[in-house]
Image (cartoon, rainbow, N blue to C red; front, side):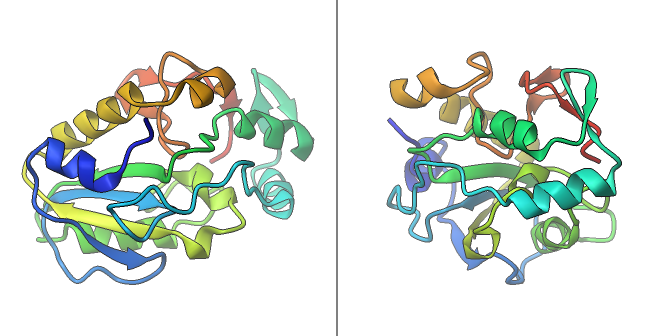
Length: 205
């Protein structure tokens, strides 16, 4: 069954999440995890979209910005091929698009700062936060929601969240996914260092 945010949080005995709309600041600087979702309600699998809501114009501009993508190690400027490949990682019955984490930095910056970095990073750029950059291709980016949960051991918790997500992917989504070994949320490209889903896309940053 698709993953509901509250079930995920409760399964690992974490505190209640808070939520902001995409682009809205988080006024807390603690270690923790955050979830980019189609749903504003953590108790529901709301807002799911059958077909990937991708922007052809963004992909065209992205390709131009980085002077071509690599698709299976071959350089291409064809946005249709890129859109087709990205669509093979879209989970039509899931509301969770990306799961991220942050430690507490030496400057005492945490969740608020990290999520703000996510907002600020433009497609095709590596800094300040290139994680989840696939979601920058979506038409509905400004309608997304960010759920956040302060917690210790955020790196470990993020991996546990992702593993739980993969374990609960529906048969319908599983059949449509290109990579069935790592059935991660759309915006997550790796489970942990060296464990990357096989998407064949390169030079996007």
